[in-house]
Image 1 (cartoon, one colour):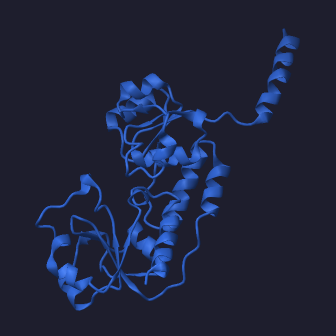
Image 2 (cartoon, rainbow, N blue to C red):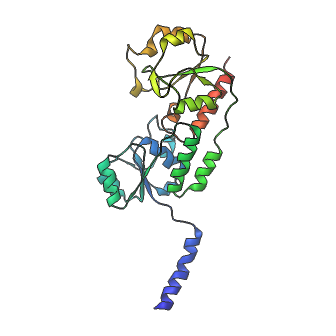
Image 3 (cartoon, rainbow, N blue to C red):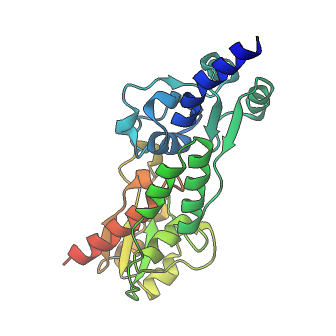
Length: 264
């Protein structure tokens, strides 16, 4: 009996040495989808969220052919993943049910700057058994562009802009720009200030998305804003890079800087 157990152990040891078996995964929202699509092997993926192929999903082309699932306990548990990855998908009752069923929940952390995006990428990579891939993506993040001194304003259809301590602000800094919006977080466009101190650059996003359609009363339609931006360089950002604090936010900063250099 002892000899048979030893033979079994020796037979299995090459499999262990060949590499760790990576966990299977389901993602519960489109932010989680980006990390799973960018970091996991395709055979690890049991399912993505139902929004994985929508326009605001940056890696939507990689989602083609992969199963989609609702973020409900019964649907996810039927897939029997080892882990679920989430940003906001799935309610607390579902998450508690996952835990009781032995399914680990990986919560995507908050990040408002490039270091945070790198940290979150590494954390999810480690959970997926993909440390090397995560480290490679972080290493590929483009460096910051030297400061140009140009002021920039982020504009959305709803008349909202991004101040300090936001990822948009971090993208601006990485692109060599100064944020014209004062204060921290998200707030309404400061129209009066913009008329007095127009920004050199306008960064626009979500104007082509039906989900972000704005009404006639939005400050984004105000004539004062059009006047303030009449001499500004306008750069349309890649919206799908703004919806999740992943490694590709640094690519967005690089592309913004390149668009400004190419602008007349």
